[in-house]
Length: 326
Image 1 (cartoon, rainbow, N blue to C red):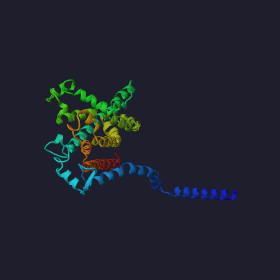
Image 2: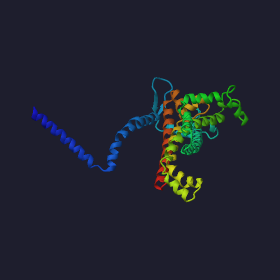
Image 3: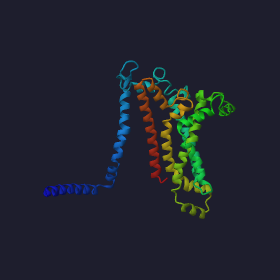
């Protein structure tokens, strides 16, 4: 018995020793990929598998009646009809892309919302981060005040702006009227979209400010001392030191916000409803709720593809900036 135990122990120690030698012989790149392997596996299970399932569903026709969830196999027909506009009056509650009605077009609304909201959130967030990066009395309380809107749940945020601009009771209606708008801005697509953008800027600017602030606090302070000795003004210090060094962080923050903005749904639904202001995510949900699973899957996959293209552009820009020493 003792001999068997010693043999088993020797075998285990031999396996352990071989595993240790194998790990030690790995290159740094191979060892890094080995450490990332569990994350990649989790990403495949959580992200890529549902994406592939969605693409498979998009290759089938809708089955409006009957027990079957999907109809016959139609290949890329759903994508062709979607991109050529043939589904706009048949299967989709709102058009996917219609230049003649931009505020009723899901793709155009999504891009308008994303570009405008991310632009102003970046500018305002950068300004807030520059202020919070300074030392002054009460800075802690200012940070808390900036973070509070970000902590508000989306449903509550949507109801706040819904009540603020609701016809008859909302004080914001008077502002819209003074700017030449109607007395019911939340039922007008062209007027409701700026309200939703304003709501998103109010809430999410704090997210941008916190990310940019983290980048600012990593800047070497001795560079500013050298700049002061050289006689550089505050603007020259910002242009030659602060902005180039914080730009990679700004690009990463914009990437996160762009991805989230292109998936906007909850804020629209709770503020003005997806019927008034359709986005790509709204279009997916409303189409799916009518049992048009093939069409909804096609819209969802196209949305994912558009987000993937935008992310790729950001990554390339970030890589070019890093290579150029930005």
